[in-house]
Length: 255
Image (cartoon, rainbow, N blue to C red; front, side, top):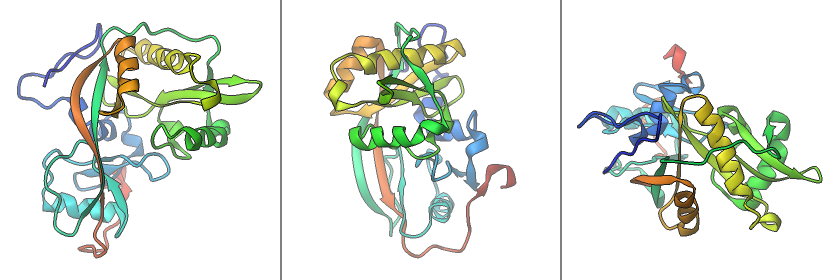
Protein backbone atom coordinates (compact mmCIF):
# COMPACT_ATOMS: atom_id res chain seq x y z
CA UNK A 1 0.00 0.00 0.00
CA UNK A 2 1.28 3.44 -0.90
CA UNK A 3 0.58 6.39 1.34
CA UNK A 4 0.27 9.66 -0.53
CA UNK A 5 0.69 13.05 1.10
CA UNK A 6 -0.61 16.23 -0.45
CA UNK A 7 1.32 19.47 -0.77
CA UNK A 8 1.56 21.03 2.67
CA UNK A 9 -0.43 18.21 4.24
CA UNK A 10 0.46 15.41 6.65
CA UNK A 11 3.20 13.14 5.41
CA UNK A 12 3.38 9.35 5.40
CA UNK A 13 3.56 7.51 8.69
CA UNK A 14 6.94 6.00 9.62
CA UNK A 15 7.62 2.58 8.14
CA UNK A 16 5.67 -0.07 10.03
CA UNK A 17 3.55 2.43 11.98
CA UNK A 18 -0.22 2.59 11.42
CA UNK A 19 -1.48 5.69 9.64
CA UNK A 20 -4.45 7.63 11.05
CA UNK A 21 -6.32 7.05 7.78
CA UNK A 22 -6.05 3.28 8.23
CA UNK A 23 -8.65 3.55 11.03
CA UNK A 24 -10.10 7.03 10.52
CA UNK A 25 -13.16 6.62 12.77
CA UNK A 26 -11.05 5.61 15.77
CA UNK A 27 -8.54 8.38 15.02
CA UNK A 28 -11.38 10.91 14.83
CA UNK A 29 -13.06 9.79 18.05
CA UNK A 30 -9.78 9.84 19.96
CA UNK A 31 -8.77 13.13 18.32
CA UNK A 32 -10.72 16.17 17.07
CA UNK A 33 -14.10 14.45 17.52
CA UNK A 34 -13.40 13.16 21.03
CA UNK A 35 -16.22 15.36 22.40
CA UNK A 36 -18.71 13.18 20.47
CA UNK A 37 -17.32 9.87 21.69
CA UNK A 38 -19.26 7.28 23.61
CA UNK A 39 -16.79 4.75 24.98
CA UNK A 40 -16.63 1.30 26.39
CA UNK A 41 -13.08 0.04 26.99
CA UNK A 42 -11.14 0.51 23.76
CA UNK A 43 -14.27 0.83 21.59
CA UNK A 44 -15.79 4.20 20.73
CA UNK A 45 -18.75 5.36 18.70
CA UNK A 46 -20.58 8.50 17.68
CA UNK A 47 -24.03 9.20 19.14
CA UNK A 48 -26.56 7.30 17.05
CA UNK A 49 -28.16 10.50 15.72
CA UNK A 50 -24.77 11.89 14.62
CA UNK A 51 -23.10 9.04 12.72
CA UNK A 52 -23.25 5.24 12.60
CA UNK A 53 -19.43 4.96 12.52
CA UNK A 54 -17.64 3.19 15.37
CA UNK A 55 -13.98 3.15 16.31
CA UNK A 56 -12.83 -0.43 16.78
CA UNK A 57 -9.18 -1.32 17.54
CA UNK A 58 -7.31 -2.69 14.55
CA UNK A 59 -7.02 -6.13 16.13
CA UNK A 60 -10.00 -6.40 18.49
CA UNK A 61 -9.98 -9.07 21.18
CA UNK A 62 -12.92 -10.80 22.84
CA UNK A 63 -13.30 -7.98 25.34
CA UNK A 64 -13.49 -5.40 22.55
CA UNK A 65 -16.26 -7.35 20.81
CA UNK A 66 -18.16 -7.58 24.09
CA UNK A 67 -17.78 -3.84 24.58
CA UNK A 68 -18.97 -3.13 21.03
CA UNK A 69 -21.99 -5.35 21.61
CA UNK A 70 -22.77 -3.46 24.82
CA UNK A 71 -22.48 -0.10 23.05
CA UNK A 72 -24.69 -1.11 20.14
CA UNK A 73 -27.27 -3.20 21.95
CA UNK A 74 -28.52 -6.73 21.25
CA UNK A 75 -29.78 -7.40 17.74
CA UNK A 76 -28.67 -4.04 16.37
CA UNK A 77 -26.50 -3.61 13.27
CA UNK A 78 -23.14 -1.87 13.56
CA UNK A 79 -20.69 -0.75 10.86
CA UNK A 80 -17.21 -2.22 10.93
CA UNK A 81 -15.42 0.03 8.39
CA UNK A 82 -12.15 -1.36 7.14
CA UNK A 83 -12.37 -4.57 9.18
CA UNK A 84 -11.22 -7.70 7.32
CA UNK A 85 -10.72 -10.08 10.24
CA UNK A 86 -12.93 -12.80 11.64
CA UNK A 87 -16.06 -11.76 13.49
CA UNK A 88 -16.97 -13.70 16.64
CA UNK A 89 -19.43 -16.55 16.75
CA UNK A 90 -22.98 -15.29 17.05
CA UNK A 91 -22.39 -12.14 14.99
CA UNK A 92 -23.97 -11.98 11.52
CA UNK A 93 -22.55 -10.04 8.58
CA UNK A 94 -25.46 -8.12 7.03
CA UNK A 95 -23.66 -5.94 4.47
CA UNK A 96 -20.32 -5.91 2.70
CA UNK A 97 -19.04 -3.51 0.05
CA UNK A 98 -15.52 -3.14 -1.24
CA UNK A 99 -14.42 0.48 -1.04
CA UNK A 100 -11.59 2.86 -1.82
CA UNK A 101 -10.04 5.77 0.04
CA UNK A 102 -8.75 8.82 -1.86
CA UNK A 103 -6.56 11.67 -0.62
CA UNK A 104 -5.91 15.16 -1.92
CA UNK A 105 -2.94 15.12 -4.28
CA UNK A 106 -3.32 18.49 -5.98
CA UNK A 107 -6.94 19.62 -5.80
CA UNK A 108 -7.71 23.01 -7.33
CA UNK A 109 -9.62 23.88 -4.16
CA UNK A 110 -11.50 27.17 -4.27
CA UNK A 111 -14.47 28.89 -2.61
CA UNK A 112 -17.76 29.04 -4.49
CA UNK A 113 -19.79 32.24 -4.60
CA UNK A 114 -23.11 30.40 -4.81
CA UNK A 115 -22.41 27.97 -1.94
CA UNK A 116 -24.03 28.78 1.41
CA UNK A 117 -23.26 27.41 4.86
CA UNK A 118 -25.87 24.93 6.06
CA UNK A 119 -26.81 24.48 9.69
CA UNK A 120 -29.35 22.87 12.03
CA UNK A 121 -32.25 24.87 10.54
CA UNK A 122 -31.50 23.30 7.14
CA UNK A 123 -31.49 19.69 8.39
CA UNK A 124 -35.03 18.80 7.19
CA UNK A 125 -34.13 19.82 3.63
CA UNK A 126 -30.75 18.08 3.89
CA UNK A 127 -32.40 14.85 5.05
CA UNK A 128 -34.90 15.10 2.19
CA UNK A 129 -32.13 15.58 -0.39
CA UNK A 130 -30.17 12.64 1.08
CA UNK A 131 -33.27 10.43 0.99
CA UNK A 132 -33.71 11.17 -2.71
CA UNK A 133 -30.05 10.80 -3.73
CA UNK A 134 -28.59 8.24 -1.25
CA UNK A 135 -25.01 9.54 -0.91
CA UNK A 136 -24.51 7.58 2.33
CA UNK A 137 -25.50 7.94 5.97
CA UNK A 138 -26.71 11.38 7.01
CA UNK A 139 -28.58 11.72 10.31
CA UNK A 140 -30.32 14.54 12.21
CA UNK A 141 -27.09 15.70 13.92
CA UNK A 142 -24.54 14.81 11.21
CA UNK A 143 -24.35 18.52 10.38
CA UNK A 144 -22.51 19.00 13.69
CA UNK A 145 -19.46 17.08 12.42
CA UNK A 146 -18.12 19.97 10.36
CA UNK A 147 -18.85 22.47 7.62
CA UNK A 148 -21.69 21.68 5.21
CA UNK A 149 -22.20 23.76 2.09
CA UNK A 150 -25.22 23.82 -0.19
CA UNK A 151 -26.46 25.40 -3.39
CA UNK A 152 -30.03 26.67 -3.63
CA UNK A 153 -32.15 27.54 -6.62
CA UNK A 154 -35.36 29.50 -6.07
CA UNK A 155 -34.92 28.82 -2.37
CA UNK A 156 -34.76 25.03 -2.67
CA UNK A 157 -31.68 23.05 -1.65
CA UNK A 158 -30.49 21.23 -4.78
CA UNK A 159 -26.93 20.14 -3.91
CA UNK A 160 -24.69 19.80 -0.89
CA UNK A 161 -21.41 18.44 0.44
CA UNK A 162 -19.74 18.54 3.82
CA UNK A 163 -17.29 17.18 6.36
CA UNK A 164 -17.54 13.91 8.27
CA UNK A 165 -14.60 12.03 9.82
CA UNK A 166 -11.81 14.18 11.25
CA UNK A 167 -8.59 12.30 12.03
CA UNK A 168 -5.79 14.59 13.23
CA UNK A 169 -4.59 16.64 10.26
CA UNK A 170 -7.24 15.33 7.89
CA UNK A 171 -10.94 15.89 7.14
CA UNK A 172 -13.23 13.63 5.13
CA UNK A 173 -15.50 15.09 2.47
CA UNK A 174 -18.88 13.35 2.54
CA UNK A 175 -22.61 13.62 1.74
CA UNK A 176 -21.90 14.85 -1.79
CA UNK A 177 -25.25 14.84 -3.56
CA UNK A 178 -27.25 16.69 -6.21
CA UNK A 179 -30.96 16.72 -6.96
CA UNK A 180 -31.44 14.53 -10.08
CA UNK A 181 -33.10 17.44 -11.91
CA UNK A 182 -29.88 19.46 -11.68
CA UNK A 183 -27.24 16.84 -12.40
CA UNK A 184 -24.77 17.53 -15.19
CA UNK A 185 -24.20 21.15 -14.13
CA UNK A 186 -20.99 20.44 -12.19
CA UNK A 187 -22.53 21.33 -8.83
CA UNK A 188 -20.93 18.38 -7.02
CA UNK A 189 -17.51 19.34 -8.34
CA UNK A 190 -17.93 22.94 -7.21
CA UNK A 191 -19.03 21.92 -3.73
CA UNK A 192 -16.24 19.36 -3.31
CA UNK A 193 -13.67 22.02 -4.21
CA UNK A 194 -15.34 24.58 -1.92
CA UNK A 195 -15.40 22.19 1.05
CA UNK A 196 -11.80 21.22 0.28
CA UNK A 197 -10.85 24.91 0.30
CA UNK A 198 -12.16 25.29 3.84
CA UNK A 199 -10.25 22.19 4.94
CA UNK A 200 -7.05 23.46 3.37
CA UNK A 201 -7.54 26.87 5.03
CA UNK A 202 -7.32 25.09 8.40
CA UNK A 203 -4.03 23.52 7.38
CA UNK A 204 -5.60 20.09 6.98
CA UNK A 205 -5.84 17.66 4.06
CA UNK A 206 -9.07 16.45 2.42
CA UNK A 207 -9.81 12.78 1.88
CA UNK A 208 -12.89 10.76 0.98
CA UNK A 209 -14.32 7.28 0.49
CA UNK A 210 -16.48 5.66 -2.15
CA UNK A 211 -17.40 2.21 -3.38
CA UNK A 212 -14.76 0.43 -5.43
CA UNK A 213 -17.35 -0.23 -8.15
CA UNK A 214 -18.50 3.41 -8.30
CA UNK A 215 -16.48 4.10 -11.42
CA UNK A 216 -18.21 7.38 -12.23
CA UNK A 217 -17.36 8.90 -8.86
CA UNK A 218 -13.82 7.52 -9.02
CA UNK A 219 -13.23 9.13 -12.43
CA UNK A 220 -14.52 12.43 -11.08
CA UNK A 221 -12.34 12.34 -7.98
CA UNK A 222 -9.23 11.45 -9.96
CA UNK A 223 -9.94 14.23 -12.45
CA UNK A 224 -10.17 16.73 -9.59
CA UNK A 225 -6.82 15.79 -8.08
CA UNK A 226 -7.60 13.00 -5.62
CA UNK A 227 -5.39 9.93 -5.67
CA UNK A 228 -6.10 6.42 -4.48
CA UNK A 229 -4.49 5.76 -1.12
CA UNK A 230 -5.86 2.35 -0.18
CA UNK A 231 -8.56 -0.20 -0.74
CA UNK A 232 -10.90 -0.76 2.18
CA UNK A 233 -14.20 -2.45 2.95
CA UNK A 234 -17.54 -1.24 4.30
CA UNK A 235 -18.89 -3.97 6.52
CA UNK A 236 -21.93 -4.18 8.77
CA UNK A 237 -22.73 -6.91 11.29
CA UNK A 238 -25.61 -7.71 13.59
CA UNK A 239 -24.93 -7.95 17.33
CA UNK A 240 -26.00 -11.21 18.98
CA UNK A 241 -29.36 -11.09 20.73
CA UNK A 242 -27.79 -12.11 24.04
CA UNK A 243 -25.09 -9.86 25.49
CA UNK A 244 -22.52 -10.92 28.10
CA UNK A 245 -23.78 -8.34 30.61
CA UNK A 246 -25.79 -5.13 30.94
CA UNK A 247 -22.98 -2.67 30.25
CA UNK A 248 -24.14 0.54 28.59
CA UNK A 249 -22.53 3.30 26.57
CA UNK A 250 -21.08 6.20 28.54
CA UNK A 251 -19.51 9.46 27.34
CA UNK A 252 -15.77 9.09 26.83
CA UNK A 253 -15.07 11.72 29.48
CA UNK A 254 -16.76 9.51 32.07
CA UNK A 255 -15.28 6.16 31.00
